[in-house]
Length: 190
Ligand code: ATP
Ligand code: MG
Image (cartoon, rainbow, N blue to C red):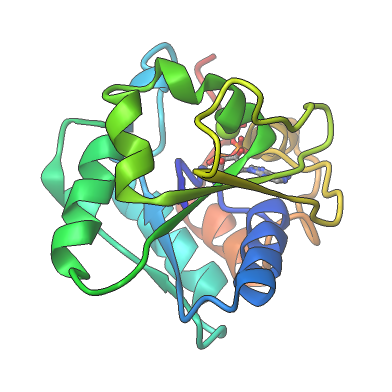
């Protein structure tokens, strides 16, 4: 599951858990982006902070892990590179890429879109405010899954912190503490 995770929240975690169970996946690997190319118009929190929050949020789940491939590659992150790197790291495994309805809508605009579907099976999950469908995508390459509706976004969490509002129960407790400890999102420039 790729994402900016700025910060990781319970919408990400519920989606990952549901898909893991539904598809019997051995592991869900969260892959925080380096600099996301779609978000070049806003300042994204330092990769190390987003990575650590993702580790904190997933540490207690034995089938969740976090990969540094996108962070360590540097530069802008393209999912095709993520999947090529993971394919090289796990040559004998079947890869699935979990994505929310909003991201699935955009997928054909991603770099090397045709190649993506050869590298992994895509799993689109429902997300409040977006319509989940795969009409625009190659048949047999995408599965759609309904997950418990969590109307949470990282943008909403950042805005809440900026306005001094609580994010308790929207993100894991350790992530609330980490945001506070590092003073993240307090004076967002945008
Ligand atoms: P931002 O508001 O900064 O874009 P976000 O909440 O959309 O943050 P991302 O890191 O952009 O989080 O999302 C990573 C992946 O998780 C994407 O595929 C996205 O569609 C999915 N996702 C995020 N939030 C939810 C949610 N509440 N329910 C289902 N899927 C989600
Ligand atoms: Mg997003």
